[in-house]
Image (cartoon, rainbow, N blue to C red; front, side, top):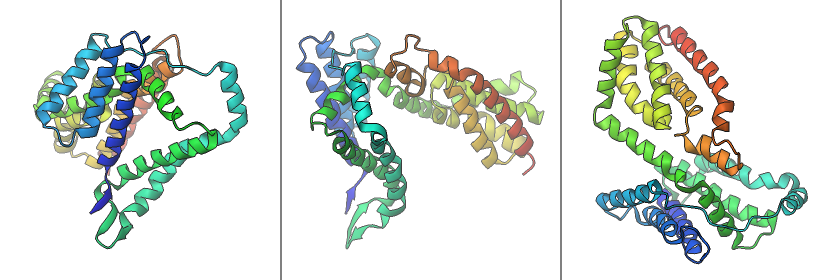
Length: 320
């Protein structure tokens, strides 16, 4: 018997999302009261009961989410925000203690990854060894919540209020990374990688080793720009370009190719609004007028890092 699995923390996320939906229903001044509440409630159900629902049912629920978001039916309400003077005073009172909850998450994740799988009482195990990192990360979030309540002396209801305000501010972009990652898996299973390989081989002189490296790194960056997720691009581009051209045709080292290839994909992450959690959400949270300000600031460094990745892979992948 295992006490903690990642489904435990998925269920906790589902409860929080249902609480957000409940707060929206109770807000008569909300501009899209019922449709916004439906969005968060459906998302909460997928987290809370996704393990027990049939895949077809989950698929229909995801389509409901997409329809609500695409038709502009998901909006933020008028959750109360602390006044600037109030926030400044609270920041002065807390000082550097405000960072303690944030630091508790990675600290718990590292310590928990190394220890949780070894804690057991007879036949009862604290955490599944195969899921121990995710369990430790979720446990770190719970510990950080308790620490935040202790440090700030906030009421027990405030995490729900602030969480509701934060989630409504982020809006439907919250689920974009998950949807894009799933789309990458579908592309990989449907043979898009082979199509990409055929196009690249017919358009570029891939018999030249440097061109094969450039095609792979460029493909990772460009596909990540389209998909918003380097993990989604990795399955398609590595299967379609990296393995057949860099590894099999020119004898490149797959470990070096894959590691530097992922870094090239992250260069695409810096350049695309599709990577919403990195580029659009921070602009929304910082209330920037220009929603693409983060991308504009990152673009020059992304180009420099991409060029360095291409040169580094060309120098290393065929020599080790």
